[in-house]
Structures are given as structure tokens and as C-alpha cells.
Image 1 (tube, rainbow, N blue to C red):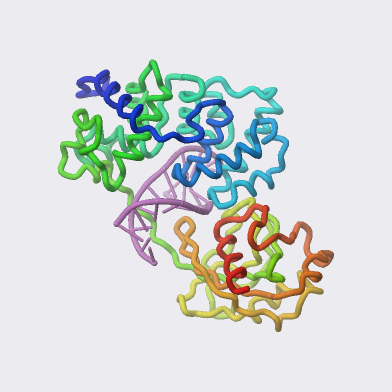
Image 2: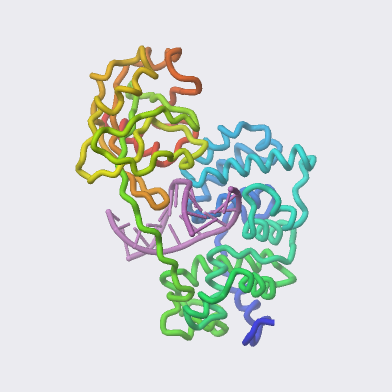
Length: 384
DNA sequence: ATCCCGGGAG
DNA sequence: CTCCCGGGAT
């Protein structure tokens, strides 16, 4: 029993009637298939509902079931994930589909415990999938639910900070509505997203504020206290567009041809192969410590790289096309974009390129690229 | 404990 | 612009 818990049934009734009236109608909420619920929960990790909707619809249209997903190439799955971020999720989803088809005869796990065994499915996702898709009485504690629970139970930030993961889990398990665990979990998360928000909680609009300890406090927004964010690191780098103005040369995932740091620049991060794993990209310098106005000289940077694409161009034809910014994890990247303009025939005749390199459209590549690469390609388009 | 991305709010 | 937000693997 939760300490101080007065009237659990009344709280449940109040929250559920609010949810029936306020619930957003989202594509995965029809609960038509375990498959759809699974895909949605993976996409919703670290990602807002608004961002997920169009990706979810495209994904389900292209990969309508787990068999289709399993026999598709990981490359195509990554391509459909382009722009959504945290690309490891897509690789793990594809890997899990392979396991479900090859090792389980295409049958989905029948419990949260079994779901938890699959790649990419942790405490949150296994609880969400099992409660929504199987009716299992388990909590699904994402950041929204965690905040809601802690506010219900704690009148101070210190109280919330003292609640460990195990304790929170106990509370969450205790409060899940046994008759409708999926609806309950959805309702708690929806309340966190729409009303019990991190920065600007709308306690005046909250259907359950009368059972909430944080609502009685001076500043509910400070419960739970926010963790100190890591210091941001400013980084400069250059990337190289080899393009005819319509198409561009892209490197396959994992390709990191040696491009030395220019003299006078210190390397901020030698190996960034973990970033954007599985995505195609442009040739890049290492990440460099530099003041924002320092210019990287194209001729010097790419002289060792160009022999890899010999037969295309000589170093003299490289120009500066523009620059853009991209924030990723704790890094703030300033990307100087260099360009080699070639004629189309030269680009489509590909024998001289390293294996796996490919030509893609500047606008809709149809290959897996991150948002960073999208921005860089955008510079090529606007500069004509 | 640290590493992975992107969107939205202000 | 800047700041804030968010699960799972290792």
C-alpha cells in the first residue's frame, strides 16, 4: 500500500474520465496489432508524439507486418528512419524482427518478460507493449509517468530525489489499474504530456490535483528536480560535397576515410563512428576545437582524401559552399561545407569510387542519412 | 556512468 | 538563436 494513499479508486475514475475526453487520437492507439504497438513504442522512445506520427505511418505502409520487416534489408529500414534520430533503435527493431521470425516462428512474445528479452525493448517498452497489447497488469514508466507518479507522492524536490528506481517501480506496480492496465498507462503518460508537464505544469486544469502532493507545494515544476545537463562542447568540422548540382556522392555506413586534422587545429573527437551509426554520410574531417570564425582551407584538408576518388577531379576545383550548425548529444557542431562541382556523366560513371559508395539525389536520397547530412545537402541545393 | 539525436518552446 | 526534453545498451 502506498503511504498516504487516500482514495485510489476515486483517483483512477477521475483520471480515466479525463482521458476519455482529452485523449489524442493517434494512429497507433487503435491497438489493431501487437506489431503496430511495438513499432510505435520504439519510435516513441526519446521522441515526441508529433515527430513520430508521419514516420509511423510511412513505416507501417512499407513494413505492414513483422515478416515484411524481417526480410527487408537493414539499409532500407534505416532509410525510412532517416531524420527520426537514435538510429540504433531502427537497427535493433530490425534485429528483433529477425529473431521473432527465425526463432519464434513469427509469433510475438506473450508477456512483458519475454518482450524484454528482445533487442531495443527495455523496462518501459516491455511494459507498454504488454499492457497495451496483451492486457498484462504491468506499469509503463516513461519520463512522463515517472514525473506524474513522483508529483502525486512527493511535496518536495528532496522527496522525489530520494525515490530510487526500485521504489518507483513498486509504486507504479501498485497503482496500475488491474481492470484496464493499458488504458491506465496511456492515461498517466497522456496526463504527463498534456497537463503535468515538466516545466509548466497546468495544475489548475488537472483532473487529479486533489490527490497530488506536489500540487500543494509552492512550485510543482521543481518536483522532481532536474538533473544538471552536461557541458556543451563546441566543435568545428568540414564536409565535402561531390555533386553535379542534382546528385551527390555518399559514403556507406561505417566508411571513415582518413582525413587528417589541418595544421594548427586540435582534434576534439577522433572517432565519431558511433554517431549516426548505420547512416550514409559525406567525407568529413575529424571534429576540431576551433573558434567559430576560423576557416578550414579546402585545398589542405582534402589533399590526402582526393586520391580515393581519383579520376573525378583535381584539388583546385574545391570551393566553399556554406556552413550550418547541428547539435548532437552534448556537441554543438559548426559544419563548413566544401564542394566539388562535377558534370553528371562523371558522377554516374562509378568505377573509381571505393566499394559501397553511391550516388543519391540531393533532395530525396532514399538512402539512410541523418538530419546533419540533410542540412548539408540543403546547402548544396540553395547554392545551386 | 556515458553514449546515442531530434523536435518544440521560449 | 538558446534551452529543454527523453529509454536502452554498454
